[in-house]
Amino acid sequence: MKKTLLTLAAMLMATTAAFAQKAFNEVFPANFAKGLPAGWSVSHNAITEQVPGGLKITCSQDAPKYRADLYYNSGKSADMNFTINSREYSVFALKFIGSRPASCNLQLNISVKLNPENKDGSWIGNETGWGLNKGNNKYTGDIEDADGNHTYYWAIEGNLWKDAAEDLTIDRIEIKIPDITEESQKSFIVSEINWYKSEEDLKASIETEPVVVNLTTNVKYDNFMDAYNAAVNNDVLSIVAPEVIIADRTAMKSITVEGATGNEKIVQDFNNKLLFNTGSNSNMTFRNLIFEPKQGPGNQPVFEHNANNKTNYVLTLDKVILRKISSSNTNGLFNIKRGVLALNDVTFDDCTVSNAAGFVNINTNNMLRLSGANEGLTVNLTAFNSIEASDLTNETPIKLTLSADMLASVGTATQADGDVNAVVIGDVDPSKFVLTNEGYSLGSDGNGNLVLMVGTGVEEIFGDEDAPVEYFNLQGIKVANPEKGLYIKRQGEKTTKVIF
Image: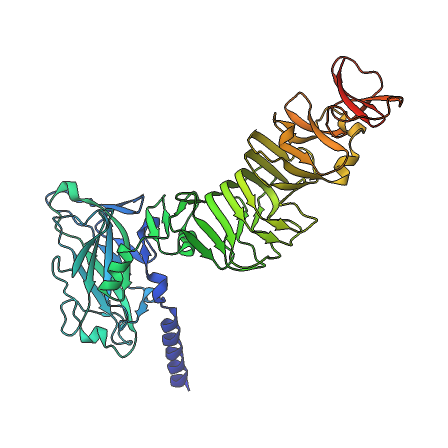
């Protein structure tokens, strides 16, 4: 019985170990632009430094020879082993920013675990049947891209590799970079390590124009979601392809996404889901882009922003066109739960929302900052002091719809307590806005704010000249005995601005 239990335990441990190893796509591509990828290490006490596009490695030895090798799983941890379909992937590639140290002896060796019962695998370099030459600088080829960066690769063509009956388990990889004799070459930058199906596949990946370039790391991507998911705080992604298609909502990021020329499109290929979800202590910026839907109208906003308070953390759209986007959601195109929405030169081209919604809905929990020409913008507003504006250049007035509670505050004592209930904070031309609320308008309070006024704001409307005269200040509060200053005079249906 005891022997049976021990056998079962051993089988269970073996099964657990087998399932603990990494999947191929968890290890590759190994992107050094974000630091040392999991499982990789640098030998000989070399100094590492993050630089745009890769990891700068500086040898620490004294002259006359320098050395710094790259190892995968140097600690022989079983849970770092990975499997590879060697029948499909036979080209191993190492990309440098610039080139390898010219005086070094670049070598590759790979350890394959042929017997699951053995703790360690077997090195296959120079072994019969495998086709991997581990000799000095015996890589198969060197490809230089348009930016002068070199990719060195090894094509493994032996029958034991290409004709393996099942996926191979790799437990270690070593890339030796020894015998550097020039001090000027003891620093080099590694960008990426990856496997490819063939030399043609590798060459195509280098020669193909990228879809997105991370301008912070100088890494190029052939699809948007790979670039977006790899980005970290403060990265700048530049879309260089004519369009990218997004088929699902994205995770929260604190980055900038911009078009290279301003003609690039982000196309939403699904309905009834958010496109970008931002906030939660993050600032997100979209610049020089066109947003379009591939399908018809949806019932969700395009953007959602939920920061930790009203004035911190900003979702910014700068020189953006929103084209033919429709939403039946009551929040319009933007669901700003908390935080700041900043719009600069944003065009709303043939966009529609439900009758009850504006393109933007602003309340006590959020803030709208406006600048430039935001043509076609409509805003539903339920709170004073929640719109900031400067340097407005729009030709068509921005439509504001104020809540009933805001309208009811006009002429009440709530505006006489020393606090200004501004509809718009900022010394801007009132004609840049128009209220959809009949019988109300915006006017300057003389202190850099636009406030709610009774009447249309037109200088003169013909009415009953025999009606009693009433005076209001610019906040809409009735004044019995006007003193020196600017007031609104109402007589029947006739309203004028007068100075005492």
